[in-house]
Length: 174
Length: 423
Image 1 (spheres, chains in turn green, purple):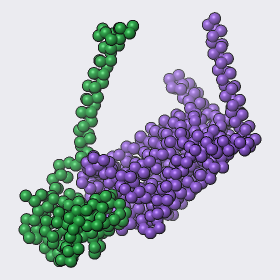
Image 2 (cartoon, chains in turn orange, blue):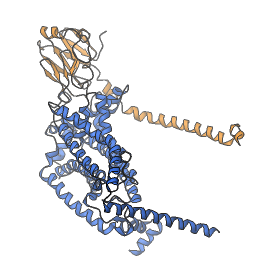
Image 3 (cartoon, rainbow over the protein chains, first blue to last red):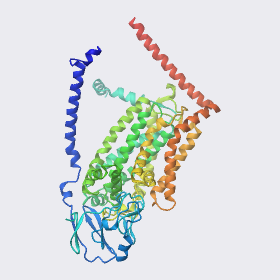
Image 4 (cartoon, one colour):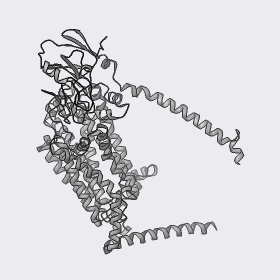
């Protein structure tokens, strides 16, 4: 009997190959059929087409900020004062240290996505940065996390200065 | 009439079914009112499905129209206010009834063998209920709706590697938007019917193992009485009491469970100063916030809901009757209840001052209870046996043992009979 199991003529062995081959083909078919449905839940092309926003920086005085919408998300535009820029030099004191120079294209202007990296609330503006009302994360004037549950600094959107007082958010600097 | 029933019975086991599941279904005669909440949950499910279908006839699942369509239901649709408040109050009632139903199961040890599958289908029902409630809460498209959905969908961002893509896939947009609203509506309409299916499985399991009872053992046949009319009447009485309380909230205090901020249309540019989930999620929300790490918090919250499924393994005591005959377990049960209330209080308030350490301590005790249980239950049993079990438990356990013996003998006799026939 033991010999039969190893012989190619063993019907059980043929069954196994047939069954597993059928299973693999059927499984692949089911997965392929599922894909359009799974994919349909991703952002549609009209959502994707809202990928850039033009924002005017006119009328924002030093120390003031403005919120614009980009891909449905708030983006904070902050015109920092000399004092604030000086205070932000270096890597910051938070858990995600990063040089301020790496976070801005022009030190006068800080452009960050206004969504707390913890659970997606919009932080409220404070003099020294932001405080998230949901779970108390605190960010400085470079958008770096100082304390609270947020794991990383505020995200930097890709943007480009097209003139001194106009930027396009969503298009990387060329 | 008799002819019609006879005609049906030849083709479908109608009379047999009613006899087996209702008029002759044996139910322990010592059930207390704590055993009313399963059927109450069934009634609330029906209320939610009916009111929900009628709301869907007037609601518009579109980010630009949703908020106004709910106000249209409240102001213009005939009795729209009533149907809407029945549905919103019904959500609260559903969780209240389910939490009491779970607490009863935990107190009397009804999750133990042979009722594990009942307990696990119950756990599945709890998850489905939570998902349905969460998705339904987005539909009015108010500020709390919006930011609640924003925070909870963000939780999936904690998944390693795939997190960001997963969140965008779930939302169908970069933030909670029109695509999110439409899919939540579709799923909110679908899930209740899946719940109905899971309830049927729950009931089939129930009719296999029969109701547990406060004594914690399977009663002898003489201690069971037919479900109908004894328990149909008792359940109907309980239903009347429930409907009285429910009606008070629907008619006199419908906004108690609706956050004022949810009467402000959703604004993706501004988070309300203080966002809170609905009351039934507060303890779990407090656990999420108690862990300083995002992934850790999400995992802790998930486990805090799912850990109940492990109860049949964690509780190793053989003493019947749950907390009734087990002083250690009883104390633990009440402390756990208190701990959940503390967590609820912490979850309802901003994470400031003493509430942060309090939430962490309460989270520690929440999980500590489950960790302690396997050892505690074993030690408690040993201690109880050394001290001498009270005569009533001994009688119960002996009675159960005698019943088992009796059943075994009957079985053997039947088997023996078959063998002798063959000869």
